[in-house]
Image (cartoon, rainbow, N blue to C red; front, side, top):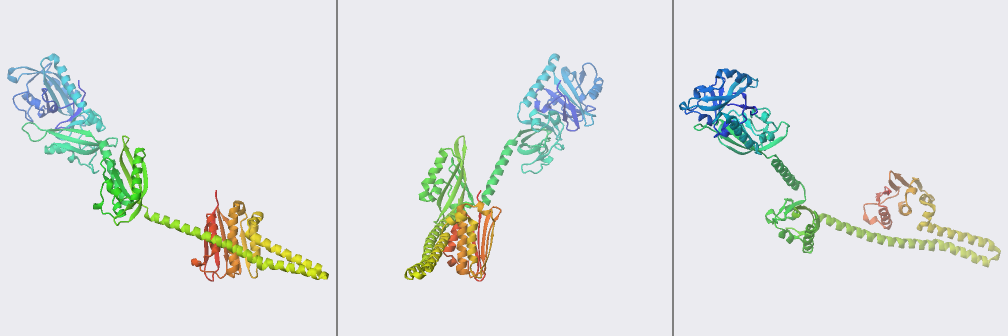
Length: 618
């Protein structure tokens, strides 16, 4: 026997019936289905039921006034208790009404029960049999054919009665909705198990379900898109069609057949595409780069609004073809850009980048940095999506920086030459004004020793004294302008010698603070640069500052060397470029060689402070 299923009648609560599908969809197989209340008054029927007798069926008439059955093996009252208690009965009967002719019938009766399990009505299935021996086989064949037909469909198919209760469902329909076939039958659109939404995300009320609208309006619903939440909580998107079933001569549907297709993947893909398009749209809105999308098959180019701002061309003057674009590329760059794009595509590379000059609406050229992502489909380049950035300001700054670096290099070279000349002049002056005078005095004493023999010992001793003085002055000059002394005695001692020389000057107080660890962390070149900066600045203090106090601090802070050299002298206007003489340029150059920072703070009457700092290497 067929499995029991739960369906709903038009006038009763859920019931249990032994047949999986109702008759309207199997009309023509002479299978009459009639629904009655517990007193066998007719409440519903299918078209085949009307063909049992010549007289028309009406709701409320007593079934066995319509068909006079002789029950095999007993009387109707003998089977009634079985109908109620067992819930179903199958057997044979004979119809004696049709012109005295007897028809052999196969009868199946199922009791309809409410949620409390109490019987409320009967479903009676009647089939004419040619012979008693083949009745069960014919009935099984009919059911089997129909079930195979329904369950072979990949689309979901359900049938609802006039009150919106599901009477039948195929396997695909139950699978799509995440339920079993048993769970499907008997549900209504008002069931709390259903949660339906519209494509815009809003709740779809039960009265707007395609099946309910079809029942209410009698008009077929086509390709209605709706989402249904499965018991697992996952939303499945459906494309739904609903067709009303209406009896001949009546206007009100007595049932509706609903077919639906799972379009979740399509909806998710469309949603992702919409989100992707939105991301692309808003990204193009917020970025200053001009976004473009070139379809290599159609040769059409999309350009974002930023391109109009960048180029000055109005949207109406911007053509979508590639020829227009290349016509605006500077002639000296055009062939290179074209060839590079084609070369990258031929090599199967996915990222293209180039820089070129582009003619704007006002006739001027801008430097553009163009970066494109090449997209391949089936091994063939199909699109290039890219972004254009205006590099004109950066190019201008780069040129300015190169020019400034060139000018600085020239200034340093000139300062170096002038510095070398100044050193030579200083040495020359020292030799002429100091050493030469001392040596001349020594020569004079030696000459006098020859002329005055009685004083020769005294005069020769004096000459030797002056020669030693000359030698000391020469050594002083050598230490001042040679790095060998620094290498011999070290950074601290070299700076200490400078400090001691300053302290010999009248009315000048010098304070020197030094982190002893520094000398171990610096190489000889770094030590020499620091020493020369200190030497240069102390010379400036002696020559120009008229200071009474000098402070020299050479300290290590974390991994940074910090030099601070200050005086309380008369100062100068540090913001005036004219005061940046050879000495300051030399000190700046040495700070740059240390990859460090150089700063001088000074103002007239407020002394001067020099700062140099640089990071130690790894």
